Length: 165
Image (tube, rainbow, N blue to C red):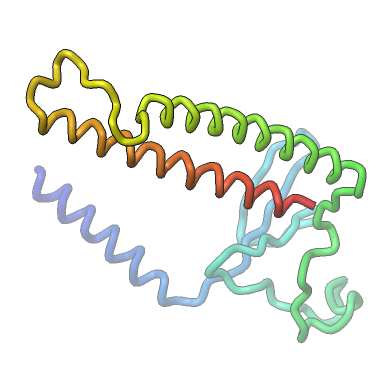
């Protein structure tokens, strides 16, 4: 029985892989009066064509609504119904983002200060469980890596904050 399942799974994978070589049709998203969403390859009234990676655009029908909209030869950068954000909303989003990044920056700077205080210029105090000097050196190296990581995080947060308009 497991052999049949494995063979069936192999056949299904092979069919999917071979199916990718054939031409793909357009996919439409349809929403009915009750709000139910249906995805289909048949265009109906009230359906919108989806632009999916790897799929081909819907065929242009002559004399239909799509031919009245203009030439289909040049692709449009963004769809006409693409949601736009007004300037005030974007400014509010940027302010929120700046506040979040500022909080993260303060937390990372505090963490760096604590790490540097514990590092003590490369000679932190030995702990009781570090009777072996190699363990102490391992902890010091780990602390040094943590400090370097915190410094890189601070640099990245500052760079990210400078990118906000």
